[in-house]
Image (cartoon, rainbow, N blue to C red; front, side):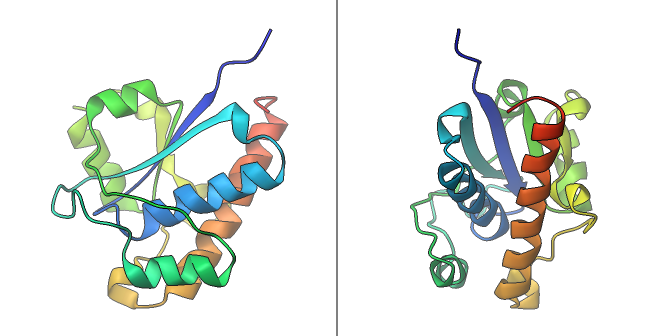
Length: 156
C-alpha cells in the first residue's frame, strides 16, 4: 500500500521571495533523492499584496545560480491550506504570528519556523537585506535539516 503524500507548505510575507525559494529548493532536493512522489509541496504568503505576481526576479536569479528553476505565482495563505497541510514552515516570527492569526490559533501543531530545523531561527528576508545568496544558503540548510528530521521520524 502506498503511503499518503506529505503535504508541506512554505510561508513568508508576500510569497515572492523566501517561500517560493524554499518550495523550489525543497522540490529539487526531493527530486534528486528520488522521493518527489512522496510530497505535495506549495508556498503561500501571509499578505495578499503580491497575490498573482511571479517570483521576484532576484530570487529566481539566485535559484538559477544553483541550477534550480520553476514557475510560481504568489498566493495568500488560508486556514484551509493550513488545515490540509502536514507541515506549514514559516520563515520568521512575524510569519508565525500572522499564520496563527489567519487560522484563529488553530493548527499550531502544524506551524513552525523552517529555520528551527537547522538552528537558524528566522530566515533573513532578502527583500530588505538584498542578500539573496545568504537567504538561499539558510533555506538550503534548513530544507536539508527538515528532510533529515522526516527521515529520523520515519516519515520518508
